[in-house]
Length: 127
Image: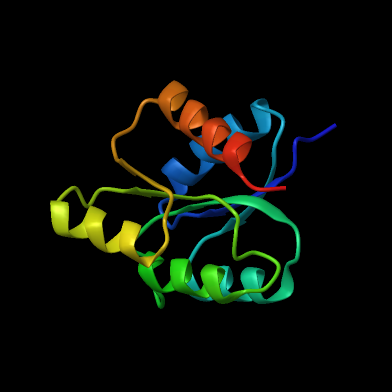
């Protein structure tokens, strides 16, 4: 039994494999989009993600644009969005949060912290 499906958007195969493993181990289903275009398609075709984990620096479409697309999507506008990126400058964090991200975690990250933050965001999600 899964706890729901997470949209994972990560272009680095090593980080993606690690996240895919961690999330599945925690009981989540995972749809892993490996670039911004694949993420846009997944968002456009979905009505059932319970959260999203987005990298910022992606091929084709960046994570900031994906946050905006999620917030404009009727069925996904209220899902928790966790930005997971190597971009650690204040302006990057502020931009993501102002566009609608719920949390921001800088790579490299601790797996336990990531899953704890994600579970907290999902618990706080309006039903």
